[in-house]
Image (cartoon, rainbow, N blue to C red):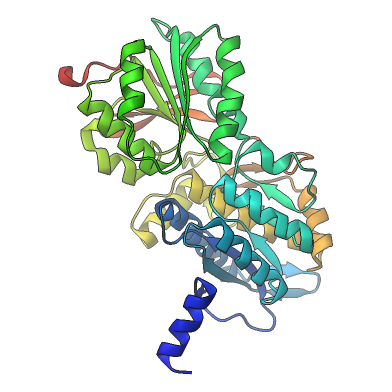
Length: 401
């Protein structure tokens, strides 16, 4: 087949399969479709890199012991180009034609929501660390498992912290994108704010991948709210912060579901990232022990050395997905998808990401730590037991920094 013919074949399918090495007959193949190009590719790469990095680490240690066999893991990966429909077709290809053994997930809740219908139909377990929407886990599906905490409680620790700030914020603007994850975040945050005695002065949905926030920011400015909570994707948050500066919109606190944990986000904004609050279910602590990497700090150091950027909770969640499948294979002592699925439901082990134990609906629940950009550092400021480090609060006006 000529190079041109191969390129045409790849174009007709929508994306070429990527894998670092060909699967051998005795390999256990994990299949996934991830955003490597398109609007959310910057986050999608965390999953591609984390999947391969963890598979390589497990293989270096001898692979996975399944019954009396020692098997190596292999990765079959497609680029879904940030297109949900293409992602569904690729997962169908993975299970019906490529005959992969088990599935890893895509990034983003709207993808996981659609793709999990494929794993359920073909009864091949999918462990995914990219979708947190409560909708994914409310359908009584038996073959989908998630390592992100419920979207509905993403702002839970932030709201708890806000009650303890001095002076405590009184009014809030809640902004959220129109995808499954961000809608779940907003639906869960409203009652949290109400229970905390906070007034929701603005409650606005915007279109995913929006680049113009000037109208919403003008409303925030005229409402003179104390706090702004934004549920969105990283590129949207970058645009929001830049435009907030240009319009001189500076509430006492603003907090974002994504972006703040990411080194790229902080580099993109420079000093303008200062004072931004965010959240993370994971920080690279040596206290998080792990049988493959040693601990989370060792994982983070090795990951950055290999890929040239720091892992955040997306990467840790993706790595935990691979570890969960490896542990379930060993526990099941078989590669049969139903046996592995049953073993996944019983998992209870320590990973570099934290304790992996799935609730009955297939979702994990890890508390979010409130984090804040404080100059050149990313500080953990509030957790399950209250304040960890002192937050920089309130945020000053842009021209007073």
